[in-house]
Image 1 (cartoon, rainbow, N blue to C red):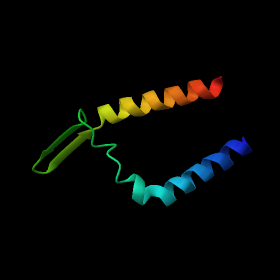
Image 2: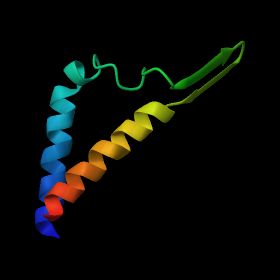
Image 3: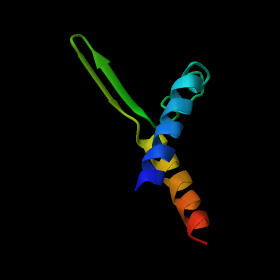
Image 4: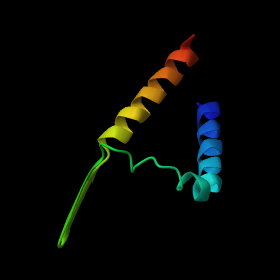
Length: 66
């Protein structure tokens, strides 16, 4: 458990340091992401981004198990 927590901390630290560059990537603004904006209301559902992230994580976990 300690190794997992240390690894998670290092990952979050790296993510925080790299955030200015990661924010410029097109994730979250892909075609297929639903964004509705009206007066006094905004709705955003990143369905394409979620599917892509799920696919990448599934492949990584599959590779890690082998």
